[in-house]
Image (cartoon, rainbow, N blue to C red; front, side, top):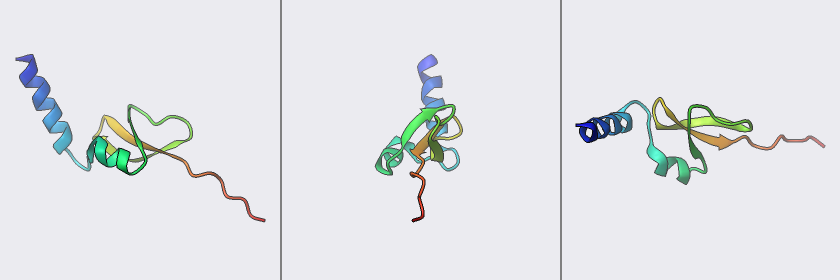
Length: 65
């Protein structure tokens, strides 16, 4: 019964909202993280909405010369 519940949760997470999965995140240069992005990263999309986020590094600040 637990296995069926796990499969149901996994399928519902992959089908929910704007979730792209880890392949799309990694291909776009991001990392899947649970909860929050770390300092120096921003939320680009969801790997599995709304729990697992796809975080990308912030671009380096530009300097005007």
